[in-house]
Image (cartoon, rainbow, N blue to C red; front, side):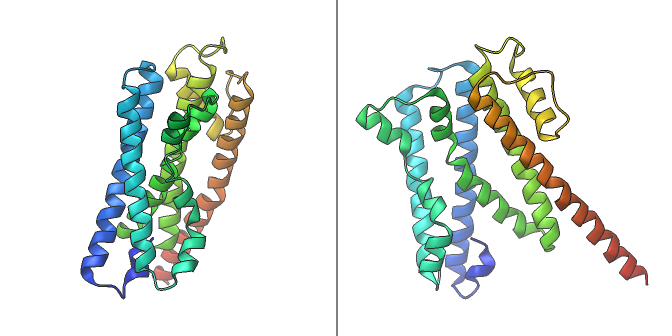
Length: 231
């Protein structure tokens, strides 16, 4: 939640809200690094119990962050409804699956491991607003950051899903190349062979195409501002 929404609160509450946002972002980076190690180095590098403990701890932090901001808001139920996604993604799904011995597909396993990154992406957007005052600049920087993060995650997921079944995929570098070419809609000679890989390709392409109107609007706005300043 942007700090401007909390301007009526005490400085201590504002400081805690900012610190929590930084902690949320750090936790998301931890999940990102652990996921990268698991996929690139192979399963078992990080003991399963240790990973589950890390995920559970991060989920607890996310829960605390959600409810702390909930009680700070004046329109509490409006905040609850508009931010319920962050409460949903804070559920420790992997721990629940482990407790009940539920079997999931490889794709679902990756999805559940990375779902916490949604909350981290929002935290990153908030942090960007601390350093820029222009709404258009905030939008552009936020989208570029999310696009880069999604492209990297897409390359990880593509590599994990296709490495044993796609003859055109030799190493992780090929997966990164595929993600970059897909997100820029240029296309690549590496074609996904799994259903999950094809879905992932469509998602990345849609995200890539949607950045161009934002970039065009940003350039137009900056140009108009310069022209107004000269006149």
